[in-house]
Amino acid sequence: MNATFALARRLRQRGHRVVYLGIPDTEARVREQGFEFLPIFERVFPPGALAEQYANEASGRSLGLPGFRDRVLETCELMAQGEIERALGTVRPDLFVVASVTPWIGIGAWKTGVPVITFSSSLISVQDPDVPPFQTSIIPGRGLFPRLRIRLAWRRLFLRQKRLDPLRLAIFDDVREFARRCGYPLDGIEFRVETWPALRLPNLVFCPPEFDFPRRSLPAGTVFVEPSVDTERRDGGFPWERLRDGRPLVYCALGSVAPFKYVRQATPFFQAFLDALAERPHWQGVVAIGRYLDAGALRCPPNVLVMPEVPQLEVLERASLMVSHGGFSSVKECILQGVPMVLLPLFYDHPGNAARAVHHGLGVMGSFAGASASRLGRWMDEVMNDLLYKERARDMSAIFRDWETRMPGVEQVERTATAPR
Image (cartoon, rainbow, N blue to C red; front, top):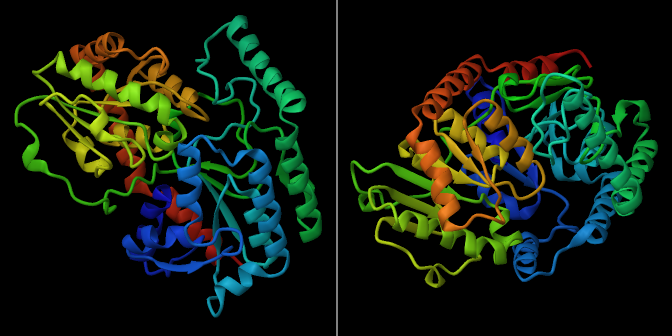
């Protein structure tokens, strides 16, 4: 949701009405940002469903692909029965903006006859001979060997999907079947992808192209736009008086997903960071551990503040370094604020995000599993002691802020919404 708030706020400032359709558990977050909200898919996601899922995953009881597929199928069946129209009530939209990672929702929205734009809150990962899958940490280079390495990575990915991930491919088939039911053209869907099928509709990638690896070609409809970082986002308070003036601030967080998906791994990681900061009393630290870890189980030195959650953009505004898992939102927010990074990828697109940050000289990449206090300390020292990391982060920040000022994504939404049907 965070990736949409800046876009939504700017559209509203330009005189448009913005209404969010979402599962009930997202209502409070959306209304907290000042937007209208309508609930949808309550039968599949009743109130409390997300909290239950997070608690289960924190206890090692993952939903898994079978449970995920059940939810996809139930959601498609509801849309076939008119769920989107029911949820809208008297609202008559001129445009739907739908997350690209849920192509079935995009197809269901398209079925209503209203134009659809998709948006990507991560970088795209569609087969390209010059760009590796984003679940790898490969950095492209010149010459034959780097190109062969990228092609081999894609070949391995598709082979793994075919042989080891039959349920994921079954969901691909579910998308095909739902598209047929809705009359959506199958040649308007890209299936040679790393994650979920991509609709060949206008797709806003919330990232300037300068951060990505150079691509041989872009998928149909793909448009790189502003990073869409909402600097007006409301994320709660913070005890600023507890920070010490004059000391470099190091911020550590693993985003909103990893702290409950990786509870056992997250605890020793945070302890390693705390131990590394204890050996560097000339720094101060802020750690956001999430709501599924026990802060009392951590040995916290006096120069570090441990909290469940923090207003990340405001903390980054004061930070000299961030230690992170490499989630795309966190990487973009670091860049916007000109903050170098130590990145320790966990899953999904984290390795690819970290590889791009290293490629542009914005930080270093290490192993999450090998993140002892001594190694973390060495990685942090490397970035903090080399002013070039800060300089390059500021240069990329200037590029990001320029794209934010020009707002091509906002203009694309306006053009599509006002174009003749």
